Length: 269
Image (cartoon, rainbow, N blue to C red):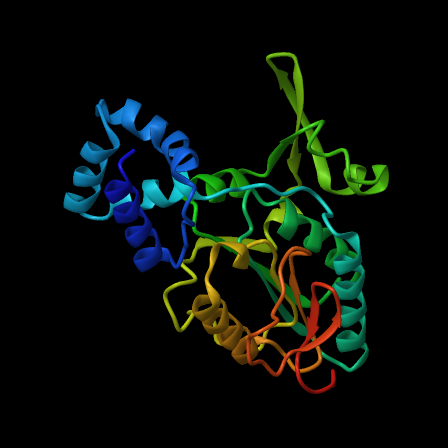
């Protein structure tokens, strides 16, 4: 791929989604776009760039899907879910009956479903929902389906598997399991471009997961995202980010409590 072509893709990714394709990622980008070139029967990345520039918007979504990395697993960073449970218990004890949570960059759904498994026994009889968003329509479709393999469910304790997963008939010799309807009804999946602000939620939100998302953003984009989190997060509750991420260098009122965990200004009440 010519450097000029790479830089053009770089500019589109940043302008449309705030994603910064760092220099030296030419080979990775070529590999990510190979499927789109095959499906469109195009001969080069330059032809694809011309197609992208003339598109009415549908191909842009597929381009952003292609360059997005969607890795996750159930109960990744389990201490985050312990803190989420503590916050929910404190809010419930204070008399709160309506709860809203947000998982930004939810990928294929394991994160919001993990949160839902934690919250379900704590908030029975309460009005609670999880908003799960991602840039990738491909990932969101899989998340909404809520079907996972035996290997993907390995991090789940047996009690949670029995309570929230239903076995499906094996296809191709592989066992598959579906998230129970009662849990899926608590999670709403929507596409959201974090580069487009303000975000459509009004808040306050009782917990926000934004893990391994900011690694794709430069400092101005991260600062803008954190500003929106501050607006939306209920005082005293928490923002959870990836362990490879930090808010260092960003002016924020969020207080670091431990690596990857930040508390909103004020106290839970």
